[in-house]
Amino acid sequence: MEITVLEKNPLRVRLYIKDIPLHVLNAIRRVSISEVPTMAVDSVVFTLNSSVFDDEIIAHRLGLIPLTSEEALEKYKSPEECSTVAEEAIFPEECFVKLDLEASSPLESNKNIIVYSRDLRTSDPSVKPVYDSIPILVLGPGHEIRLEAYARLGRGKEHAKWSPVSVAAHKYIANISIDYSKCIEGCSRCVEACPREVLELKNGRPVVRKDKIIECTLCRACENVCPTNALKLGYREKEYILTIESTGSLSPRRILIEAVRILDQKLNDFLDKLRQNGVIE
Image (tube, rainbow, N blue to C red; front, top):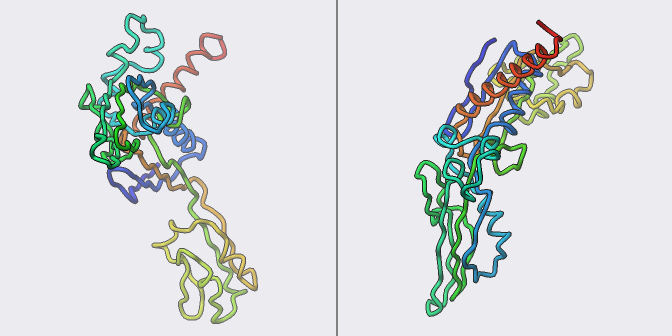
């Protein structure tokens, strides 16, 4: 297997991967979306809300605020473990992080104020909103809000708010073949039709730009406009580009590591079940 990093920044990674079965790559992609845990607000206790926003709307908005989760994966119990914790407390500390919100707009000010994610006060500094400027609600003159939000670990398969990725996708690498015996000298229709400039005209003939081939989206615009069917578009076997874009809760690197670890554990559990049932030795 060969892996080349095409792009890497704190929120996004693009990898060129060669000699990997599609079903393995797709499994990693799907686990990244639905199985890698992150922290998100799951319960909200309102003690005061005189705004025009219903409690349910505010709670929903709080749940969709991404929270930093790098350290939380080691500090807090998994969703499965928390479901079996004795309910000595409604929100046990080993499972939940509390975020307090208290804001008001004085009646005499005669103006509206916007409450942002940065106004949330967390009981654990390692779990806080990834972005400070996410608007939660607007308070009019004389309005006030006071609540306690409780965040826990969860997975995307339970609710999208726990998914650590905003994009998790793979695509094929194009394979463009040109039969020059069918080419019309000076024809540039396929070159002009390509939206990604993957083709160029050299010595009156269309040629594939090797430095641009990974940008091809397989839209077939070039193939469709070729008057002599000289150009054929396919894809390379076992060569793909994997793109992971994080919500900010976890780094793309951590998402991939956790996805591979979880997938490996699932396969090991499957093998153990087969052994227990005598299917394999």
